[in-house]
Length: 121
Image 1 (cartoon, rainbow, N blue to C red):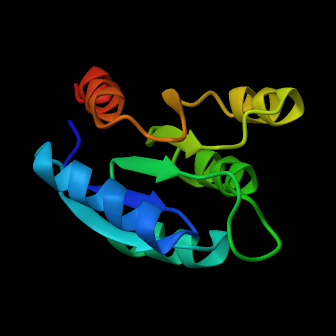
Image 2 (cartoon, rainbow, N blue to C red; image 1 turned 120 degrees about the vertical axis):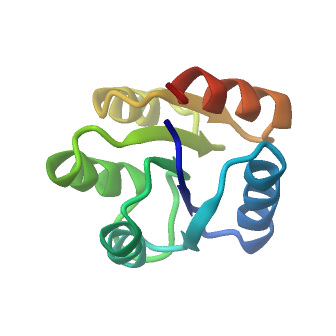
């Protein structure tokens, strides 16, 4: 069951859009972060059940690097990539992390709702 979501997105407007959508769908948001380091700190503090992760983030590490670290620390956490980065090499890296879903931007709120509902077990 998803009790809280953390949004990792470097674009403020996209982060707010995702937060608003999660709240409308009944999923509490524990916080947002724009860099991998800030996201790890937030994840460790709030222990969310689900992450919405963009690939491109502020700082030297990207969202895929972050998810690899999260998988080592919290293997059961649910992860949905929400990204505009759909190049073949990026998709190979994303899929190697075994995400629970991939949504390509622009984000369709109904697609986000469906992905969240699929993993909310």
